[in-house]
Length: 310
Image (tube, rainbow, N blue to C red):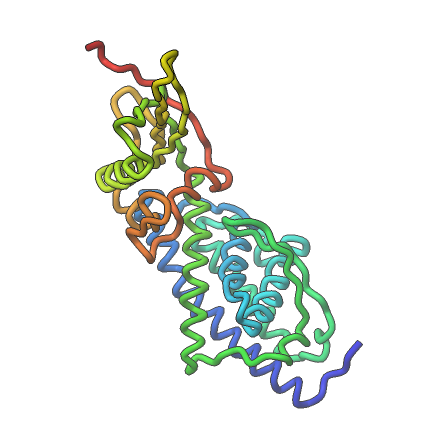
């Protein structure tokens, strides 16, 4: 068990003060992201989504600081996420309550981290060697997080006047935005339309399938098309290969008179690409393929439609 020097204590207190400033700024920026998500998705922020969701929002934002080439961000993220994630095991009184909205849940979680950081600041020696461990959950997976207050003696977390501070804020708020949308999209459903459509290879190449899909998304931004190549020959050996394509839509679900698509503004904000890696919004949150195939806890269903007789 290490005993801190006066110099180490001073460095940790400086880093704690900068982390408090960072957390407060992230709360302000995060509020705008939550409000924007609810507005674009036409949802009402009228209920508490629970303790774990609040932790995911804050931990997901901090975790993004830990890029592979940023040791300062990684150490700060592991410590902050360890502290916040541990609320799931030892829940503070301030968070062990029912709140009126996700905004309030996020606020209370952020305030609790402030309180703990202030406590550490007042007496770093008392908490110096305590290890805080948890699991961070974000839209892309789960990750172990662990850190000690003493770890902050090895870095210099940027102050508000440093340009790196705002770089960290921008990184964290983008991750928070992703976390928010991944959570709220669980209110919607992905519908695959059946039957599939056949595209003969003598008329369509793989490149043309991709171009058609990208063009389709410009008009119908809530869709993603997937297809499978089938190699086939007739008795004469003639090539009869074809692509079998399905259309998929995210929204409220299909009915007899509507596809229930997610509104265009929400889709344009959310999707980075049209077809795979064809970038249409570099500031978007997710690749289209990820939303339709890998987004967790969103319902998938099918809808059968019938072609009119010729």
